[in-house]
Amino acid sequence: MSSADGAVANGGGIVVERVHRAFGDVVAVDDISLVARPGEVTALIGPNGAGKTTLMLMLATLLVPDDGSITIDGYSPVDDPREVRRRIGWMPDGFGTWDALTVREVLHTIGAMYDLGAAESRIRTDEVLEQVHLADLADRRARVLSRGQKQRLGMARALLHRPTTLILDEPASGLDPRSRIELRDLLRGLAASGTTVLVSSHILTELQEMADRAVIVSRGRSIESQAVDGATPVARTWRVAALDRGRLVAALREVGANWNDAGTAVDVLLEGDPQAAELLARLVESGAGITAYAPLHGEMEAAYLAATEDRQ
Image (tube, rainbow, N blue to C red; front, top):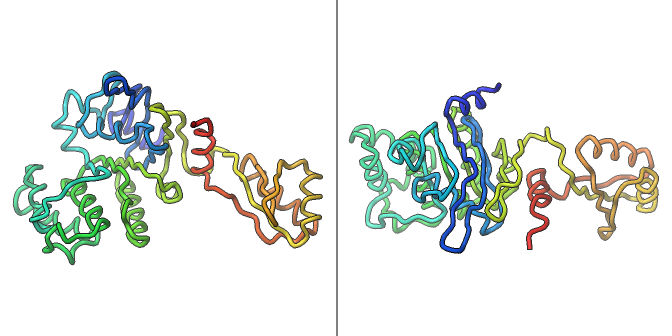
């Protein structure tokens, strides 16, 4: 058993079991189960309306499930909301700021809400502003911040009280490319220190780089959970181009590959990386002169597309 699995078995991390939530006749979450382990970044992915935000609101103690159970570090958001709030850092997709306050004052106010002493609140404010690269804007009023800067302030608010669990809904929204890279590195660092990180995003290429595990949800249900490490074979389409297209096509036919025209190139469906490596070796031997050979989608994108291919 890994240390992460052991922590979950001992009550650590997030455990969601068959959760259901409806708003009148509209079922937002139908049957979602997932585990987010300490020391890992877990990606929650799915189309709009899949129930991701509703689930996160339940994790953050802001909604109560109609059925099923949720624990965070062994505590229930329904039965022990105050204890759960002490342990989580919650960053919603959209949040308001006290525009008349400075960035520093916003964080001092949040610190008071978490019962941080004045001295500790000042220390933590300086630390988290450095972490999210807002130290130079500490004395600016929140109303002058750009959307991306407000997103970074939201991350600072989530980190201020040293939570054991981070719940982040679209944290990269509005961030410039450099800030996205910094966010990825920050989350990887927090996970390495033992924090449980659950992050939702529509930007699958970024999640591929930062996540250890992906949970795919659709129509209010969790439909797949997998490690993001290449250990589980994922069928993907590879695009192949060659100097001699005739020889390329002949070689593909000879090996019985499943391929389609893609302009001057061809697309080949392969079950996994070992098959891709084997096919490349055969194509090189054919003398076609391979000039391009790459997957059209990352493993997470491919898994997501396969799992949601029946979406209307």
